[in-house]
Length: 329
Image 1 (cartoon, one colour):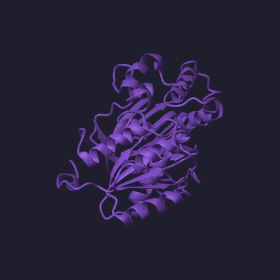
Image 2 (cartoon, helix red, strand yellow; image 1 turned 90 degrees about the vertical axis):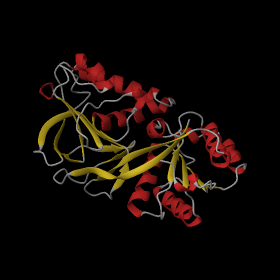
Image 3 (cartoon, rainbow, N blue to C red; image 1 turned 45 degrees about the horizontal axis):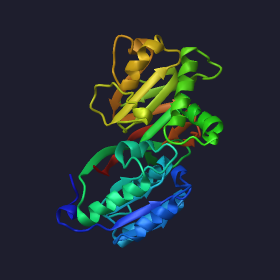
Image 4 (cartoon, rainbow, N blue to C red; image 1 turned 30 degrees about the vertical axis):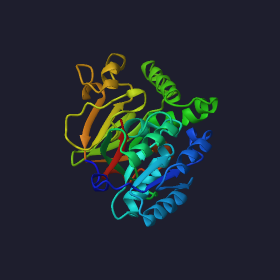
């Protein structure tokens, strides 16, 4: 559903938040600033740290911004969502336009503007000023993650066990080679899946975990992968969910050394269950409202790495609210 200001014919006030340090913004910011300067009713603000992002959003809210464009990576989007949902700086939640400006940009590829940042901004401004293009509003739940020793944070993708280890491996072994986009994460997941199929436990150490889904009894197991997300498309177009419940959060987990992993992989990566994709074989997927995880491992939220202060208290992932994202077709 389009916002009331669009239905009334009002030209929105657009705020563009720019993170100059995001992977995709290392080059080409002059062109971005030129496009912004050529368009009326646009404010922009450079912000790198969570505090600066908070200041930017507070400034936009005071100026009456009702369409917020995020020119930054997944971590920048996470910081924006955290401030929007934890502190409510806007009287009405702004419509979000996420540009593909990070190293991986998983959020933008699913709910934002894939492709060139310059062309995406031009497309966005043509729509706001002239009504050109076909807008699509994508409404998605947002994760709220409360980990011991950390403030609550909001985002779109949570992962632990091999996902956490994989991001560490990506930054130390692959990202330093200059790979951008989905190639680097794709190579990382292939490396970890190959190690899992070959059962190289020295490469992927088991992560003991206790998981409680909603009000069900807790489940203890040695985990290979645990992920929770509200994104419908992960990198490389993966959709590793096959739960049949109606909850807003997709939860998927693989036990360490699951049975028939090689045969089950095609179904898992496309989100289909089958005779090999069963709990008895070590594959779990559900749609839930809340997940509690007692873990001694770190975790990632939208590519940023965190470590709970203790594994005795649970890290809680729940539904933090709903955000509206704009995509122009």
